[in-house]
Image (cartoon, rainbow, N blue to C red; front, side, top):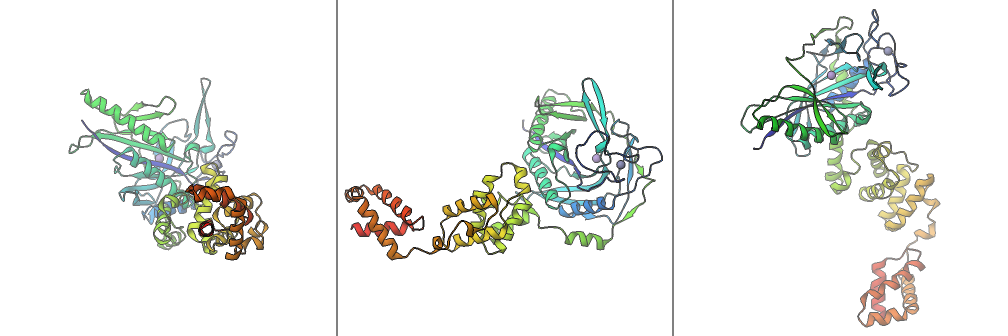
Amino acid sequence: MSYQLVCGIETHIELATKTKIFCGCTTQFGGEPNTHCCPVCTGQPGALPVLNKRVIEYAVRAGLAVHCDINNNSHMDRKNYVYPDLPKAYQISQFDEPVCVNGYVELDSGKKIRIERIHIEEDAGKLVHDGGYTYVDYNRGGVPLIEIVSMADISTPEEAKEYAEKLQLIMRNVGVSDCKMQEGSMRCDVNVSIHQPGEPWGTRTEIKNINSLSNIVRAIDLEMERQEDIIESGEKVVQSTMRYDANSDTVYVLRTKENADDYRYFPEPDILRFYISPEKVEEICASLPELPDAKLKRYVEDMGLPENNARLIYKYRNVTNFFDDAVGEGASPSNALNMIIGTIYATLQTEEDKENFEIKTTPKQLAELVKLIDDKKIRANKAKDVLSKMLENGDDVKTFIKEEDLAGLSDDDLRTLCQGAIDANPKAVEDIKNGKDKAINVMFGYVMKNSRGKADVKKAEAMIREMIG
Ligand code: ZN
Ligand code: MN
């Protein structure tokens, strides 16, 4: 029997503010345990939280980037629970008035995954299990988070991955977070249930804290199989919290829920309600950069670039800025793109290298080189060599190409070279006359070498054939 997946994702994203949500401690990742802390973020009695204004701005920014409505009136709530990662025994979060509601992320297929809400909250500390002991590090406690809650619109593991990847891309592009899943600045909780087409939805389970895009697919696949086995054997799926373990490639139950968690939410008395003015929302909206999907569309539809190639750059904000600037300096889009993905990318090994895109050549310098290709003053292969050298030390094109290199080869000069090639290769001439067409390649070598690469091969071929007769 075939079952259908019903899936929604809750995504926690750490905001890129310099300081924490309720105090002035640094949000920097890592550091000696318990050195990025103070009485506020360790929840000491009597310490009072002050809401970081930037956190609200970042949340609005994130919300607008995924087409959310912004609640002008909002407030914080207490979510009560007892666990050692949270010393005050409650998390300051949002319950009934989240900053953003009703957005969506559009997949490549055109399908929209709706976003129910985005709220702000504080991150908890980190438990470190080692040698039979558990240690607690509060450096992460109080780091600002947004939690993005999708509707259960996801129908395949691949859609789940694409949704998370798009979210990551968008949030990085608008600058609210670096969204590094391996460092935990983006973490996905995936809700999974299965049912037969036409039947009511099944009982769902929640796989917590998945930390890579490929693990999202794997975890859902495994959990679907597990639920199918349970249903097929006549049992019932029990609502539970699960974990995916990448090492053993298994999903397992952490705890089952007897009843829904009761967090006893109530309005946080230590923090005033806050108002986000429509003018402020407007201002943030106007400051949003062009989003990746819009960029891809512009590259393919307006610039006429091949989609496959455009996809190699559209994700990286620094790369696309560089590309757009080079085009702005007069480079043709297609040759500029080819130079980036053909030559510059060869010097950037990892995703992160592309993300950072720290290269010595400026967009203007690339444009100068590309314009030479555009005007057919140098061949693309020669341009690649030149660009490789430019990338090494940041020098201009003119350091590597002399004026005389650029002067075109006249037809008379080419004719002289072709004659030279014929004279130097009597054997090849004989072979061609006897029908061995490929023998002409030997003569191209001669022409290219003696023209220092400037000769037009097609033209040379026509001339040589004509001269041999
Ligand atoms: Zn603090
Ligand atoms: Mn949360």
